[in-house]
Amino acid sequence: MIFLKEKTILDVLFRAPLQGEFMKNLILLSVLLISKLHASEAIGFYSSGSLLSAQSVFERGTPVHKLFVARGRLYTTDEMHNLLTETSEFVKNNFPDSEILQVGDLSARLGGLVAGHDSHQNGLDGDIVYLRRNKYVQSPDSTDWDEDFISNSKPTKNFNTERNFALFRYLVKNAPVTRIFVDVAIKKALCQFATANGEIKDPRTVETLRRLRPLDLHRTHFHVRISCPANDHECTPQSEPVSGSGCDDLSIILESAQDLHSC
Image 1: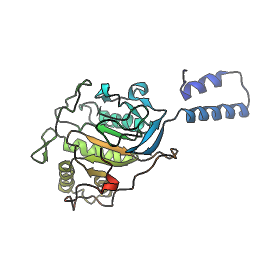
Image 2 (image 1 turned 180 degrees about the vertical axis):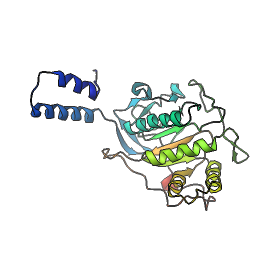
Image 3 (image 1 turned 180 degrees about the horizontal axis):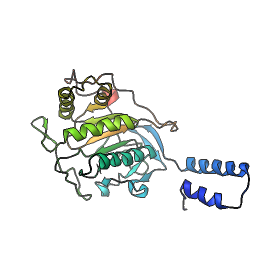
Image 4 (image 1 turned 90 degrees about the vertical axis):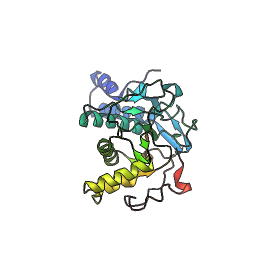
């Protein structure tokens, strides 16, 4: 079965010999119903869920560099697709000399448990490579991450602090991000960066740092998690992170067991 895009349907129908506001309203209603029937749906929790009507990043034409293609973790909700598309455009427009956004695991076609993750089950989680100074692009055929961005408990020189912090600020401001999991050394470095730049008390900076949650196994990439879409009524939300930047007490580097649902 071939599904036409909404705009295509509208173009075809409005060229038909139909008259009157009633018919136009009927057409618009039909388009909305078709759109709803084929919208993705996140079901359950991030670590105990499934995914309906999802498309792969290749089917959607998402403008990212997809890694680990052979694993088949190519699928997302519409909302995560929008995040990836808009984030890729942000990087391209603000850092024209940067590497393309490189994306690791998303979800399986129907969601559910995938090897190496507890989460990534309902299409609302995505792994993204940190922005590099050397702008290296990893092969899509690689079987694992090519670079560890932590050395001696600090970010390496190839970790682009300024650009990654700008990227995180963009994500928190413009997308329904609930958490971004990073290595604790990266959280500490970004707290220090914000302090050195006199931004540590800026509300937008505080909110960005609040969403950056230190978690093991994120030396090679960060993990962005978005909230349950408003119309996905069977999606189970996660509690909000505690208030504040978290920079004053980084000795507590992991969230409580009931909140963690690790990656």
